[in-house]
Length: 315
Image 1 (tube, rainbow, N blue to C red):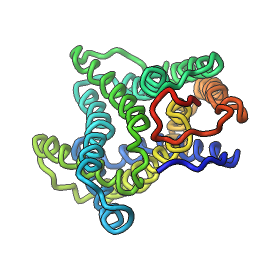
Image 2: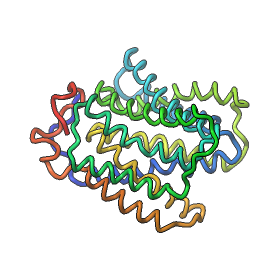
Image 3: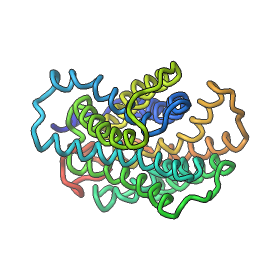
Image 4: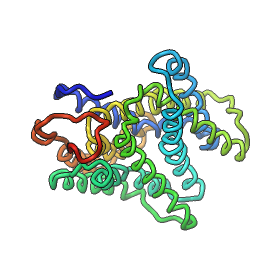
């Protein structure tokens, strides 16, 4: 399967980017509600299990037959992009790595993807795009500065945080390189969620059991995480990766910290700060710099088929 050769409408990317950053930052809301009465591993288990079960009938009845090779590939990406990524951060927080530092490292995913895109995908970022990436990092630092501390966690817990971020970045570019991003999203996401759910079940069972608390806030949090932060968010992320470069898609994640603070202000009455607005402005400018400006920045030949080997065309 290859992408159409016509250029998408110029409004498609801004709309997808807005949907991605709003849904990406929304995980904070669901986690805040669900984790009030349950451990993080139990929350992650029910989040991935319910997401996979919602998609399962569609994955079985709609779309092409899933072969053994495609199944194994998607299970591997489920381990990387859900279990190791989400579970790694949960483990780090459980080991007393400060939440602000974990959030900062997780929001550096675009920097890792930009660095990996050249050797794996053959996508060379321009000086303008690297400048935008640097401004994105600066904006994240400005927003996160007040909440940063080193904490007293063991050294390996900090390494787990960095490793979780790098695993997600590597899995993203590998999906583009291998062409596995072309599987219908409802099928790939179903396999990834159910794979992660099996592994989170082991962790949650070890931590105390799999039974959810009979608590309306837990149920609301899980419903939010399933519908908005998993199905919608990952769906938009994978669809964006089909249409645009990995570095461009991931760059909007830099907007996650200030948008998360807006969520906290709207729903929980947490105060806003001048640093948040300054960081938001810097990050917005950086994201704008990483976006293509007309056909010239996408290449004269237009978008390439996703499955082509790296180096044949660069965005």
